[in-house]
Length: 598
Image (tube, rainbow, N blue to C red; front, side):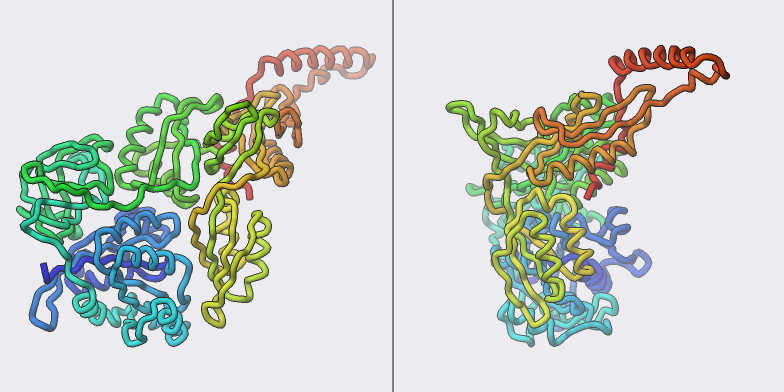
């Protein structure tokens, strides 16, 4: 056990985690030259296309140290985007140390600080690494000062490396051996293992990734999951390399996998403790916190017959991504579907994309929103949760609505302060603090309503700061707010899937935008279509799609005008009757386009 090192790689998005991981794999010859490719651990098409890591990836390597000993490294490469910070927290729970990467061309950014605090909370040994030092724009001395200020470490402890050229990789290897402590655990104790991830394999069932804290696990042994209370036989156990490598036994300090033939996703829970049936442990491991979804949206199958298939797909996806939550819901416009909770808009986009690619499920997504609390005017009524706009009562019966607020940290260059403050004010935010980290890096802290950052805040922040600003947030509390339900009516019929909860000051502008967009998207019919946006009984915006009209007077060449008028009146009566019984079809594209309204 003295020769085992468990560590993860943490950094802000695009600071070179996956590239450095590739160099470590090459250096230890874990992957042969023939099999080597960029982002070797990222096994999803979306990860390669977008150049981002979505899932944490665990792999075992072997390193011959200069002291003549052979060491076993269990490395977990983690995502850097704020929407996937839950993956990072799970990886940190399975490690004793962390490689903290900082891009020498960009310096410390918001997610660097956020991930660092996560690691410090778990008492991890931090090894700071300055990456991309081979680039012309690298600011080695300035960024070194930033890291020293942040960690309070000695400048000599910072390793200079380049994931692209492989410079400094050997220094990183030696630092892992010398600085990261070996796992603490007792092989003679009862089995105690933490389930830190799981994946679904259509042939083998659920594969759980585990970190053994105490004891030993043998192949064929009967095991129990403490939280669910279920018992299984360990059909196969092993270690994680590029492929799974079966072993006869795993002991304290090891990171590996277990296959028990579980086919039902609900029977396994990430964060659970695994123990032996014969000699069980008394205490469960203090797992990491349950996920708190930030953004909610309805996901509905295009064809209602696919409802059960969609449920199966979401359950299998939840195994691979424990931060996804869902529950059934129904909509008058879209039929049966699911109310899903996501960590952010990128997370929602990725889930939609994965449903389409991995499970062949084409879905309609409703306008994303957050959770609110409302208080009714009725005597003795309790405060209740509002998950969809439809849950909000009529304004006449509503006492108040509370919405969630967040504390956001933005790190940027001083020249963008004005634009960033304008964006925050436009989003109903207020600045509470600003700190100069260095002469050309400033950290601004804002208090903002969560609903305002859900849509386009991150994208707009990146564009106004030319990609320099970085963003991270933590939830605060619920505060009273003047929110209203905006309903969209088509020929006086409300379309519940297009309803939204918005602040009263922005309701009119948002209503006009949706009405204009729907006028472009809805196909013309044989009758007039009135598109209205309303708050309660008050209509605040309206657009009209005129009817397709056959030229019934074409056959009247000359003659008395009354003949033409008679034909037009007859047509008018027919149109009136048609509008009374006509239903407006809303194409799928309309729901998707409304999401893109800025």
